[in-house]
Amino acid sequence: MTLFRTQKLPLTPAAHATASAAIVAAAYRGRGNSSRRLPLGQVEVGETLKQGGTRQKLFRSHSQATPRWASLSSSVAAPPAPLPAAMKFSPRVSSSRRKSRKAHFSAPSSERRILMSAALSSDLKNKYNVRSVPVRKDDEVMVVRGTYKGREGKVVQVYRRKWVIHVERITREKVNGATVNVGIDTSKVVITKLKLDKDRKALLERKGKGRSAEKGKGKFTDADVAPPLQEVD
Image 1 (tube, rainbow, N blue to C red):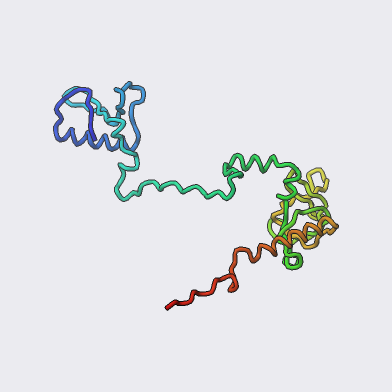
Image 2 (tube, helix red, strand yellow; image 1 turned 45 degrees about the horizontal axis):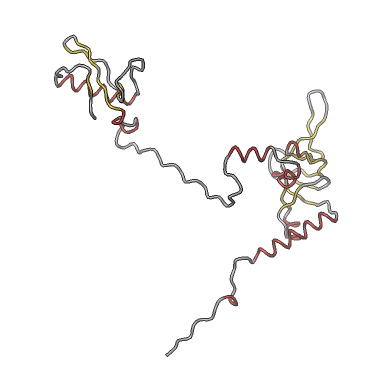
Protein backbone atom coordinates (compact mmCIF):
# COMPACT_ATOMS: atom_id res chain seq x y z
CA MET A 1 0.00 0.00 0.00
CA THR A 2 1.51 3.34 -1.11
CA LEU A 3 1.45 6.11 1.53
CA PHE A 4 1.41 9.88 0.99
CA ARG A 5 2.50 12.31 3.71
CA THR A 6 1.76 16.02 3.86
CA GLN A 7 5.16 16.69 5.51
CA LYS A 8 8.20 14.56 4.81
CA LEU A 9 9.60 13.79 8.26
CA PRO A 10 11.79 10.83 9.25
CA LEU A 11 9.87 8.24 11.27
CA THR A 12 11.44 6.16 13.98
CA PRO A 13 10.67 2.40 13.97
CA ALA A 14 8.29 2.86 16.91
CA ALA A 15 6.42 5.69 15.18
CA HIS A 16 6.28 3.68 11.94
CA ALA A 17 4.71 0.73 13.79
CA THR A 18 2.20 3.05 15.44
CA ALA A 19 1.29 4.57 12.07
CA SER A 20 0.81 1.13 10.48
CA ALA A 21 -1.48 0.04 13.31
CA ALA A 22 -3.48 3.25 13.02
CA ILE A 23 -3.88 2.77 9.25
CA VAL A 24 -5.21 -0.79 9.64
CA ALA A 25 -7.57 0.21 12.45
CA ALA A 26 -8.92 3.19 10.53
CA ALA A 27 -9.39 1.13 7.36
CA TYR A 28 -11.37 -1.47 9.33
CA ARG A 29 -13.55 1.11 11.12
CA GLY A 30 -13.90 3.31 8.05
CA ARG A 31 -12.84 6.41 10.01
CA GLY A 32 -11.58 9.63 8.49
CA ASN A 33 -12.04 13.37 8.53
CA SER A 34 -14.61 13.92 5.76
CA SER A 35 -14.61 17.71 6.25
CA ARG A 36 -10.94 18.10 5.24
CA ARG A 37 -10.24 18.68 1.56
CA LEU A 38 -7.81 16.03 0.30
CA PRO A 39 -5.80 15.90 -2.93
CA LEU A 40 -7.64 14.41 -5.88
CA GLY A 41 -7.52 10.61 -5.82
CA GLN A 42 -6.53 10.33 -2.14
CA VAL A 43 -8.48 9.38 0.98
CA GLU A 44 -7.46 9.86 4.60
CA VAL A 45 -6.96 6.57 6.47
CA GLY A 46 -4.59 7.39 9.33
CA GLU A 47 -4.84 8.96 12.76
CA THR A 48 -3.09 12.23 13.66
CA LEU A 49 0.41 11.48 14.95
CA LYS A 50 2.77 13.66 16.94
CA GLN A 51 6.53 13.52 16.54
CA GLY A 52 8.86 16.30 17.59
CA GLY A 53 5.93 18.65 18.09
CA THR A 54 4.90 18.40 14.39
CA ARG A 55 1.48 17.00 13.36
CA GLN A 56 1.27 14.80 10.29
CA LYS A 57 -1.40 12.71 8.55
CA LEU A 58 -1.08 9.68 6.31
CA PHE A 59 -3.02 9.22 3.09
CA ARG A 60 -3.46 6.55 0.45
CA SER A 61 -4.79 6.52 -3.11
CA HIS A 62 -8.40 5.62 -3.96
CA SER A 63 -7.17 3.12 -6.56
CA GLN A 64 -5.17 1.31 -3.89
CA ALA A 65 -7.95 1.30 -1.30
CA THR A 66 -8.43 -2.14 0.25
CA PRO A 67 -11.98 -3.49 0.78
CA ARG A 68 -13.06 -3.47 4.41
CA TRP A 69 -13.45 -7.27 4.52
CA ALA A 70 -9.93 -7.78 3.11
CA SER A 71 -8.29 -6.17 6.19
CA LEU A 72 -9.77 -8.84 8.44
CA SER A 73 -8.27 -12.22 9.12
CA SER A 74 -7.45 -14.38 6.14
CA SER A 75 -9.89 -17.01 7.44
CA VAL A 76 -12.86 -14.76 6.55
CA ALA A 77 -14.25 -15.75 3.16
CA ALA A 78 -14.97 -13.22 0.42
CA PRO A 79 -18.60 -12.18 -0.24
CA PRO A 80 -20.49 -14.82 -2.28
CA ALA A 81 -21.05 -14.24 -5.97
CA PRO A 82 -24.59 -13.24 -7.02
CA LEU A 83 -26.90 -16.05 -8.10
CA PRO A 84 -27.67 -16.36 -11.83
CA ALA A 85 -30.99 -15.04 -13.05
CA ALA A 86 -33.80 -17.56 -13.46
CA MET A 87 -34.47 -18.79 -16.97
CA LYS A 88 -37.53 -17.30 -18.66
CA PHE A 89 -39.96 -19.65 -20.36
CA SER A 90 -41.91 -16.97 -22.23
CA PRO A 91 -40.35 -13.78 -23.64
CA ARG A 92 -43.77 -12.08 -23.52
CA VAL A 93 -44.01 -12.37 -19.73
CA SER A 94 -41.87 -9.97 -17.74
CA SER A 95 -39.80 -11.28 -14.84
CA SER A 96 -39.80 -7.87 -13.14
CA ARG A 97 -41.23 -7.95 -9.62
CA ARG A 98 -42.97 -4.59 -9.91
CA LYS A 99 -44.56 -5.45 -13.27
CA SER A 100 -45.75 -8.85 -12.03
CA ARG A 101 -47.35 -7.30 -8.96
CA LYS A 102 -48.96 -4.55 -11.01
CA ALA A 103 -50.39 -7.08 -13.48
CA HIS A 104 -51.77 -9.17 -10.61
CA PHE A 105 -53.44 -6.43 -8.57
CA SER A 106 -54.76 -4.51 -11.59
CA ALA A 107 -56.09 -7.60 -13.40
CA PRO A 108 -59.64 -7.27 -14.79
CA SER A 109 -62.48 -9.45 -13.57
CA SER A 110 -62.17 -11.85 -16.51
CA GLU A 111 -58.57 -12.63 -15.57
CA ARG A 112 -59.32 -12.79 -11.85
CA ARG A 113 -61.88 -15.51 -12.57
CA ILE A 114 -59.09 -17.77 -13.87
CA LEU A 115 -56.61 -16.75 -11.18
CA MET A 116 -59.18 -17.59 -8.49
CA SER A 117 -59.24 -21.30 -9.34
CA ALA A 118 -59.36 -24.08 -6.77
CA ALA A 119 -58.25 -27.70 -6.88
CA LEU A 120 -60.78 -30.50 -7.24
CA SER A 121 -61.09 -33.28 -4.71
CA SER A 122 -59.47 -36.62 -5.54
CA ASP A 123 -62.83 -38.14 -6.56
CA LEU A 124 -63.70 -35.31 -8.94
CA LYS A 125 -60.14 -35.26 -10.26
CA ASN A 126 -60.33 -38.93 -11.22
CA LYS A 127 -63.82 -38.52 -12.65
CA TYR A 128 -63.18 -35.54 -14.94
CA ASN A 129 -59.39 -35.84 -15.38
CA VAL A 130 -59.09 -32.17 -14.39
CA ARG A 131 -56.94 -30.73 -11.61
CA SER A 132 -58.59 -27.36 -10.98
CA VAL A 133 -61.37 -25.08 -12.21
CA PRO A 134 -62.44 -21.50 -11.41
CA VAL A 135 -64.63 -21.32 -8.32
CA ARG A 136 -68.22 -20.17 -8.81
CA LYS A 137 -71.23 -19.56 -6.62
CA ASP A 138 -73.08 -22.68 -5.34
CA ASP A 139 -69.96 -24.88 -5.49
CA GLU A 140 -69.37 -26.88 -2.31
CA VAL A 141 -65.86 -26.56 -0.91
CA MET A 142 -63.82 -27.75 2.06
CA VAL A 143 -61.15 -25.62 3.73
CA VAL A 144 -57.94 -27.68 3.89
CA ARG A 145 -55.53 -25.16 5.44
CA GLY A 146 -55.63 -22.08 7.61
CA THR A 147 -57.68 -21.05 10.64
CA TYR A 148 -60.88 -22.69 9.39
CA LYS A 149 -59.29 -25.97 8.31
CA GLY A 150 -61.80 -28.82 8.11
CA ARG A 151 -64.88 -26.62 7.62
CA GLU A 152 -67.20 -27.36 4.68
CA GLY A 153 -69.93 -25.34 3.05
CA LYS A 154 -71.43 -23.87 -0.08
CA VAL A 155 -69.90 -20.84 -1.77
CA VAL A 156 -72.28 -17.91 -1.31
CA GLN A 157 -70.16 -15.27 -3.06
CA VAL A 158 -67.02 -14.99 -5.17
CA TYR A 159 -65.57 -11.62 -4.16
CA ARG A 160 -63.16 -10.99 -7.01
CA ARG A 161 -62.47 -7.43 -5.93
CA LYS A 162 -60.79 -8.71 -2.76
CA TRP A 163 -59.53 -12.02 -4.19
CA VAL A 164 -61.59 -14.09 -1.70
CA ILE A 165 -64.69 -16.27 -1.56
CA HIS A 166 -67.41 -16.37 1.10
CA VAL A 167 -68.50 -19.77 2.39
CA GLU A 168 -71.69 -20.33 4.33
CA ARG A 169 -71.36 -20.84 8.11
CA ILE A 170 -67.84 -19.35 8.10
CA THR A 171 -68.60 -16.02 9.73
CA ARG A 172 -67.47 -13.79 12.56
CA GLU A 173 -69.17 -11.27 14.82
CA LYS A 174 -68.22 -7.61 14.68
CA VAL A 175 -67.90 -5.31 17.68
CA ASN A 176 -71.33 -3.81 17.00
CA GLY A 177 -72.89 -7.28 17.01
CA ALA A 178 -73.28 -7.68 13.24
CA THR A 179 -72.36 -11.01 11.64
CA VAL A 180 -70.22 -10.91 8.50
CA ASN A 181 -68.66 -13.52 6.23
CA VAL A 182 -64.96 -14.27 6.49
CA GLY A 183 -63.01 -14.08 3.23
CA ILE A 184 -61.24 -17.32 2.30
CA ASP A 185 -58.52 -17.49 -0.33
CA THR A 186 -59.19 -19.99 -3.10
CA SER A 187 -55.78 -21.61 -2.56
CA LYS A 188 -56.99 -22.81 0.87
CA VAL A 189 -60.03 -24.76 -0.36
CA VAL A 190 -60.79 -27.91 -2.34
CA ILE A 191 -63.95 -28.25 -4.42
CA THR A 192 -65.96 -31.28 -3.28
CA LYS A 193 -69.09 -30.74 -5.41
CA LEU A 194 -69.47 -28.81 -8.64
CA LYS A 195 -72.40 -26.66 -9.73
CA LEU A 196 -72.90 -28.08 -13.24
CA ASP A 197 -74.54 -26.42 -16.21
CA LYS A 198 -73.94 -26.84 -19.93
CA ASP A 199 -71.06 -24.34 -19.98
CA ARG A 200 -69.35 -25.96 -16.98
CA LYS A 201 -69.74 -29.42 -18.53
CA ALA A 202 -68.23 -28.19 -21.80
CA LEU A 203 -65.31 -26.68 -19.89
CA LEU A 204 -64.61 -29.91 -17.99
CA GLU A 205 -64.85 -31.98 -21.17
CA ARG A 206 -62.47 -29.68 -23.06
CA LYS A 207 -59.90 -29.62 -20.25
CA GLY A 208 -60.12 -33.38 -19.78
CA LYS A 209 -59.42 -34.04 -23.45
CA GLY A 210 -56.46 -31.69 -23.41
CA ARG A 211 -54.89 -33.43 -20.41
CA SER A 212 -55.43 -36.84 -22.01
CA ALA A 213 -53.70 -35.70 -25.21
CA GLU A 214 -50.71 -34.33 -23.28
CA LYS A 215 -50.31 -37.38 -21.05
CA GLY A 216 -48.32 -39.37 -23.62
CA LYS A 217 -46.72 -36.38 -25.29
CA GLY A 218 -42.96 -36.63 -25.73
CA LYS A 219 -42.74 -40.34 -24.86
CA PHE A 220 -41.52 -43.01 -27.26
CA THR A 221 -42.78 -46.57 -27.57
CA ASP A 222 -41.15 -49.65 -29.05
CA ALA A 223 -42.97 -49.02 -32.34
CA ASP A 224 -41.34 -45.59 -32.63
CA VAL A 225 -37.82 -46.98 -32.32
CA ALA A 226 -36.14 -47.86 -35.62
CA PRO A 227 -35.01 -51.49 -35.99
CA PRO A 228 -31.28 -52.15 -35.65
CA LEU A 229 -29.17 -52.05 -38.80
CA GLN A 230 -28.17 -55.38 -40.30
CA GLU A 231 -24.53 -56.15 -40.70
CA VAL A 232 -23.27 -56.24 -44.28
CA ASP A 233 -20.44 -58.59 -45.27
